[in-house]
Image 1: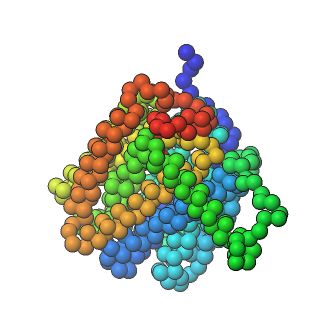
Image 2: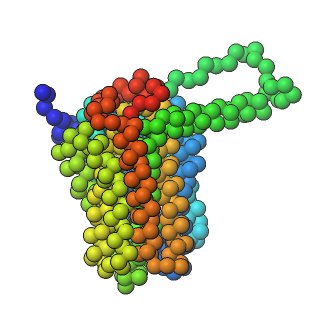
Image 3: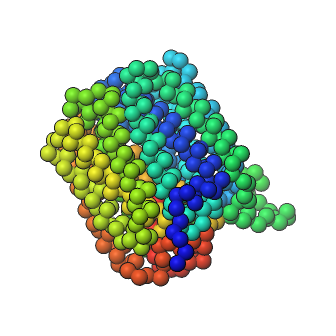
Length: 448
């Protein structure tokens, strides 16, 4: 038996190191800016609903970007897509740091900045299996997710401290600089690869425009039709396959167990805390996942990860029901940490997902999956903020966790039906060889 892959093997790949450094920079800066803006809105308005709306402004644009921009990373070189997205976001975030900018303009710029996150993240997710092969891929995914969570923890705490002691604009300026550095790491450290999807065959020059319509108008209509057709095909790929659909929904379950993030400021205020307490609540929602993720990936065998995926998905939501007891700050941090630790099931879902999606559709598939996660979170945050105007944030979190646990139980049973033990799709197969298998009518698979 060959020796098991290690995290040292992952970091021995130069391209992965460049990808990892870019993730370290951008995630911490983004989180710091988002938390700072959220706290700024809550301090000026005192409204849980408006605070949740401001927080959701960093998530909702994924519905547009995920639908219309994510497949750019299939039709264009993925490295180029990431660099361009970083440059555009640098310009937008730098504009946010201009002094005396009204809050509504800051939120609008945050909305615009987030529009370029879906193509960037889709390109990053799609290029990772090209950089890391075999069991290196889930280990690399664990590293990226742990880095993402660590960045969220540092950004959350840093955001609270920034508002309390420094101010929001230095945080935004730091975020802008991280995009420049991220673009440099990607442009210099990752080699160029051609677009994964083959370009559509050019139409004959003699082709006539649609009857009664000018050539330019007909071409625009054809381009729009092509975009809609690609979007339709992407949804068909994911939703017509029972196993893919189940895993996709397991990934989207994150909307329920991250509700504490959307009401963190009013939750902390209800307990008598300020900006630092808010940062601690936000940090607790990801800190334990950051610790458990590398252990889960390194120590648990691939087949065992899939077996634990459903139960952990249920527990990550069910644990939040304990907030109905109105615990204090310390107990709340423990509850949120336990819930977050169970969220490591997403590693198994992600690996199973990429195994079943063909390379030429991978970025679009990740784009749709990420869109559902982000939009679901945004909607959940707004709904939770509105409910917190009427009942306590603790009750809102408990109800959301209960609903998520019920849905998770249904999905767990469904996954066992479509992916019985010993099924023909091994969890640890090489991600780069997924294309042929994913075209079968009902294969067995997983999510982001």
